[in-house]
Length: 163
Image (tube, rainbow, N blue to C red; front, side):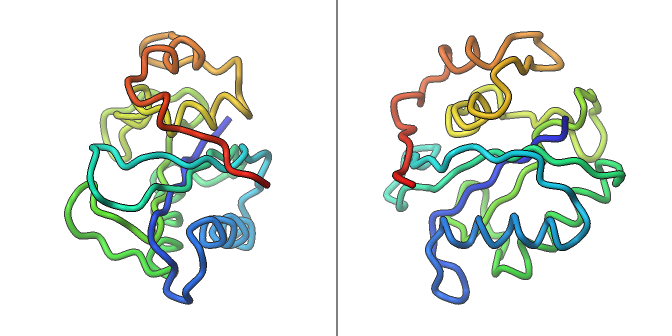
């Protein structure tokens, strides 16, 4: 299974809400020939690290594609750019963020780093991941998503959004 994380906390370039921006990104991914297998519910989460930024909208999606990890991440970055993402400082507010979380359980320290190096600590990734892959285990630690979520310090800050 290929897993991506999506997040946004600023209006899109077209003044769309963060949730609408993320939904559009998923359509763009599909238009590029990547199959969307599943998507979690939408969640609201406080910024990490804590700041005065607006809350984020987050989701996790499962994909299928023949693209290797590097070209897939390049495609995701191209979609971010088209949607108005400007990379500034780390952890800055953003129009959109799409992360490659896991690629069929591959472990790779090159580019891209797999699994995503901070996913196991972030409830805003783990809670939506649990929606679509409750039996998923971290390829490095072997811990299941439920165990990782129980250990995540920010788990109380992640709340489901109404449909």
